[in-house]
Image (cartoon, rainbow, N blue to C red):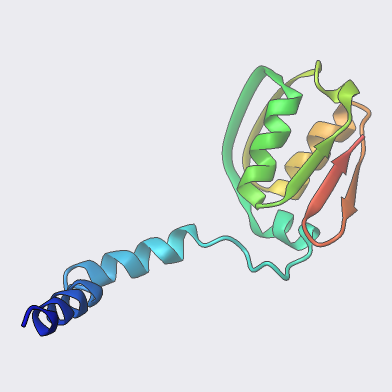
Length: 120
């Protein structure tokens, strides 16, 4: 009769341990992305850049970094790929950082759908 013993082992493996429960709850709260129903502009205002100091950095890579932080999709026109930027930011929403970077380079952005940005 191995079957009941296997059920007990399976149930025991599924139950969370007392020591592991608070850590899992804390880590889920700190890395949770914004809800999927948020508009991209709202996501870009909710996420803040605490400290960003770039010298002669690729604008393309910087925009990808910001999109990853805000959990939005990004489409970048080919003319943006070879540009370099220098910027120092402390505690600003991602939307303001995006606007500073793009407007200083004579570029613009457009919000598309529920989770996408087009840079042109």
